[in-house]
Length: 299
Ligand SMILES: Cc1cc2nc3c(=O)[nH]c(=O)nc-3n(C[C@H](O)[C@H](O)[C@H](O)COP(=O)(O)O)c2cc1C
Image 1 (cartoon, rainbow, N blue to C red):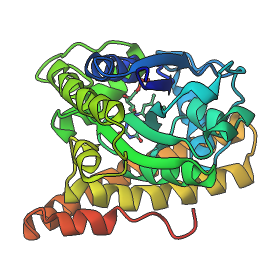
Image 2 (tube, rainbow, N blue to C red):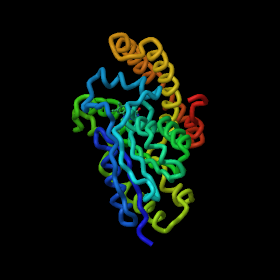
Image 3 (cartoon, rainbow, N blue to C red):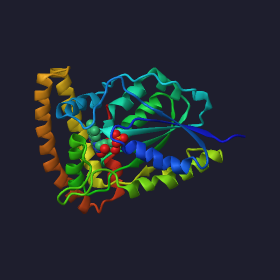
C-alpha cells in the first residue's frame, strides 16, 4: 500500500500560519505525502493594514459576511486527511477562511477527517467554536485543532501585535519584545506533525487518545478564556448594531466603529484586571477555563 496522503488548505496574510504549516510538515512529511493549496480571496486584504480597512473587517468577521474565494482545483478522492490552516481575526476565523467554508468547494469536506491548525495572538477559543460548528455543519469528521499562540506577556502583545499589523514592523522596540509567535514556539509543531503523520501512516483511528494528546493549545488560562467570554458578547452586540445602522462601508459605519473602538479600550481596561484577580483566586483552575470556553448559545 502506498503512503497516505494529506491535503493542507490554508490562508496566511502575515506569514505566521504559513510558518506554522512549514514547521508542522517538517515532521508530518516523514510519514505521509502532503499537497498544499492556498486560499485566495476575490477581495484583497492588504498588509500592513490601513486603520479603516482593519476595523471594517470587524463586523463582517463576527456576522459572517465573507468574500468569495477563487475556485480551487482539488481531486479530493486521493486524500486521507485534510489539514486546514487558519488564523483568528476578531475572535473569528479570518474572512478568507470563512469564504472558503462558505464555498461550493468546502462541501467536499463531507465525511473527510479534518484537523485544523490555527495561529493567533492569544484569543482563539471563540474562533475554534465557530470553525468546529462550520466543519461539523459541512458533515466533516472534525478531529480537533492544534493552536499556536504568541507567548509574549499579554500587555506586551497588546501593543506589539497591533503595531505590526499597522506598520508591518515586527522587531522589538523600547522594552517591548518582537511581535508574533517566537521561533521556539513554531519548532514545537515539528514533533506534533511527526506524531500525526505516524498515526495516519499506521492507519490509526484519528479520533484516539494519542491524537487528543497532540491536539490542543500552547496557551490557555482562566483570564484569557474570561476575556473572550466577555469579548465575544461585546463583539456580537457591536457588530449587530453596526450592520443594522450602517450595513455598507462608508462614513456612518466608520463613525460607529470609532465608538466600538472606544468601548473596546474601556472593556479591556476594566475587564482585564478583574479576570486576572479571578484567575489568582481560583489558582488558574482549568475547570474555569473550560467553563468560560463554552460556545455561545445562539451563534
Ligand atoms: C484583522 C485581524 C484581527 C485579529 N484578531 C485577533 C483576535 O481576535 N485574536 C487573536 O488572538 N489574534 C488576532 N489577530 C492576530 C492574528 O490572528 C495572528 O497574528 C495570526 O497569526 C496571523 O496569521 P497570518 O500571519 O497567517 O496571517 C488578528 C489579526 C488581524 C490582522
